[in-house]
Length: 156
Length: 458
Image (cartoon, rainbow over all chains, first blue to last red; front, top):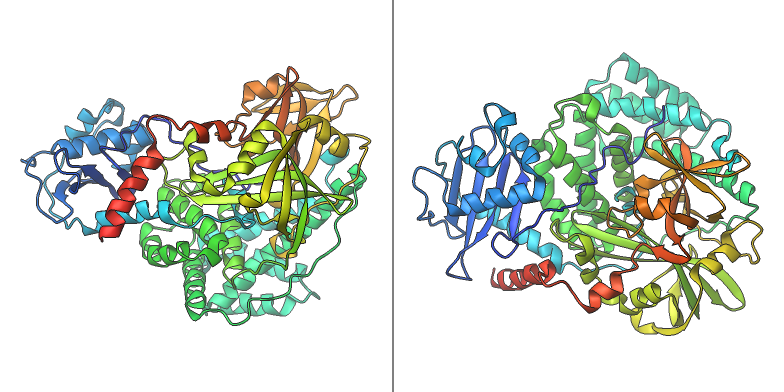
């Protein structure tokens, strides 16, 4: 049996409807669901939010590290939007698997089921996620190329 | 086509050798056990009396004595690539003989790299070091802790246009690894693919790869099809066409690539190619392009310059494909050439025109079948999910122009253009239309606006 150079390739193309204006950045990275949510009132301000895998601990602050006023003991509207957009991007199954949501996974059908299993507030600096976001935006400013690119034959 | 289904002698044996070799990457070279050590010693026998004999034997000895240096792992990548290169040559010979086509003359690419800017060498060294760490740990035990620190190097490489090949590959490879490790079930590791990507990454990180010296040509270009490839952060298309110049006709390729982010998919990818306006418009309308002084590499790659192309009259795409690439062709052409360092069966791409077939679903596949008992699978795994060529289009097709491809131990056709009810349908057909009237929710525009606001500020 011969192996394929394409086995295991992630052919998932994003299909859900994303609100990029409200949540310009969302990713599953290094044990967290994290992203950036626009402020409703100030175009210069963004909120940096994350949920941690396993514990479902969470936090939300501005990119200048001011804690989000909407955070009580539970996730604010930014964290809820982040979760909604993550599900639109990756699907509920992949999000709940990645977050290793505790309890019966078959019962997790919407963001409310994940929020309902929330952990506790965990204060972390916004800089790491924010610089991931800047780096994400930087992709759109990198130079295009007109040279042969045989390495892309591996990616479809 | 049945002759294609009988692989040249030795092909399967070579593929089996590669499978055995790859097991080392599952365990990790720091933890090799008896079966993997056996595979390495068989590989040393295979390369006996070749220029690679000594380096391979030195590397295996050193690694088994826990002496871990990048250059030993570079040699492992080189021998695996040499085996793939041998397979490429054998299979290219098989298909050229079958189709009665001559192969291109060899070219040598002069090393023009000269003295590298020092920072490039440092970055590439850091890539090789990272690849060695992956090989030492092995895919079974690989965790994000080995991956995340590499991001700093990767970001530098992405910003350097000279390293686009390295960047395209490493970014895709990194994304794939970070999304899947730690792997809970070893059986789900795409081992062959991941060792392929590892080896290619090591090879292209030995030194920056110079372009061969181009000649400047003028002539007429008729585009016949497009191969569209992408991962989350890059989209690249290669156009295949016929270039007539100096009383010769040659098959040429044009590649355009641009970085992107994951949410830019579907038709919006076409908004990302500002330097391909005439190219994509002429293609979607099947109009000839008159080229004036464009660089052509000896490999058959044109270095595209959109402002040097003018639209000409219409041509019949499928009729041209049939004349050159069908049975008993009316014309001959100069083929493209894959440089020796890139030879891997995945790069085989022999253009062919097929008709008078029936499409038969077989297991998970679509297979072309002819009255005389010949058959050929369709390489559906090579068709981008963003392509206009869907399963339904294929099922209703009467003619296919595409590329003969080899993967997983068999030949198959990757369709680039198909005829359905007398009309040509091809990948990238709608690109020009989308560029003229972009969708209302323009994700590219929204993110670019954000980027210019935030990146300028910081």
